[in-house]
Amino acid sequence: MKKILISVLLIAAMVLSLVSCGAGMTMGTGGTSGTYYAYGGILGNQIKASAGITVNVVSTDGSKANILGIDAGNYQLGTVQSDVMAYAWNGTNTFAEDGAVKSFRVIGGLYAEAVQLVTMDSSIKSVKDLKGKSVSIGAAGSGVYFNAIDILAAAGLKETDIKAQYQSFADSADALKDGKIDAAFIVAGAPTPAIQELCQTTDARLVPIDGDIAEALMSSSEYYTVYEVPAETYKGQTEAVKTVTVKATLIVSANSSEEDVYNVTKAIFDNVDAIAAAHGKGAELSLENATSGMTAPFHKGAAKYFAEKGITVTAE
Image 1: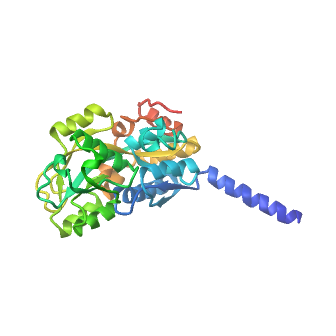
Image 2: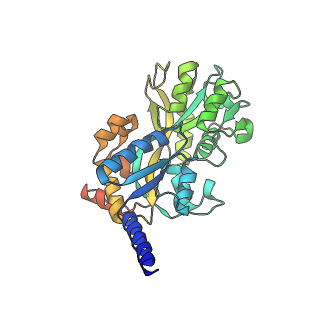
């Protein structure tokens, strides 16, 4: 009996030792048709190769699910929209009911998440033309939903002015293809797989979000900046399309060790060229992009890495 007990204790000690040494982390990303999932896989591979930490990348419902997953202890890492991260930290918008969540910390900003308004309806040339149309505005309470509501408001429209549908990226693309909806908001790094696939087989196109609408949006919210989806990003797109963007951000559990988070941060930002070679959005990785515009505190492990690069960030 004593030998069995000793064996159990030794096994438990080994497991705890492996966990404390960064044996593995789970990363919440997004739907398989979005950028989060594919990009998360690239980051996971790089972290494993450079830091020796295995990252299990899982598909999720996106930003809010990843924050709540970290809060529940199911994930240690997550990709989130910068605006949703702020909602969680402050307990507003999509987190108004749940209340503030402060169990995560920032590792760094990754890339621009373009607000892409997709349609196959030739009469839709502006956000204002969505009035009375059937429009997918993302899953109810999702980051995409709040982006869509913000943009509709900037164009003088309310949710009730459209026939709102609450769909994922993949479902939105299928509904557009089948003629069940007139337009869809998709917020993700461009090119987005769901839009790429749609443009391969249809005459789908992006609708600009610019001019007075973009100005009104940015004057009412700190999260948005102007952005251009470059020409030829999608099949048939011959010119750059102006829109707005939020920032994809990598967050981590506040309970993760300083050593692990330092090594994860170093694995990413010391290997920008390798990540960029594996995924187009990697080209947007930079120390400036990683550390600017964050509305929640950094993890001390990430702050240590950035301090070595001469950049001071707020950490807890």
